[in-house]
Image (spheres, rainbow, N blue to C red):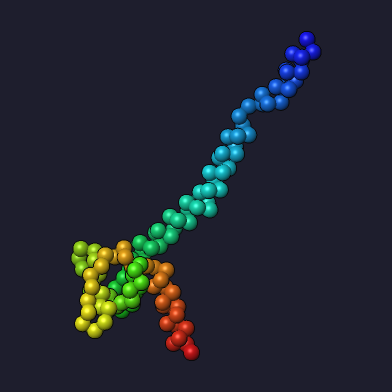
Length: 115
């Protein structure tokens, strides 16, 4: 009789329900959403907006491969014609333009021009 009472007493606190683990899982998902998923979606939207705003003749860009060039023409099929050097042209897709490296190039050129 004593042994069965001990088992009942030991099992009683754990029989409270599943509220704790469910709350913990929901909390982990919320934290993961705000620290990982949301910033990644925001960066992707900014990258797409940047790629759509590229103009011919005035923008100097850096591709994801590290090629520095000036946009000479925006083609209708979503590609860009780049002038790498005088008379040297290359056609790339818009998605190959790196927003981070292009903005770093612009900051660097602004710093040099300010000196």
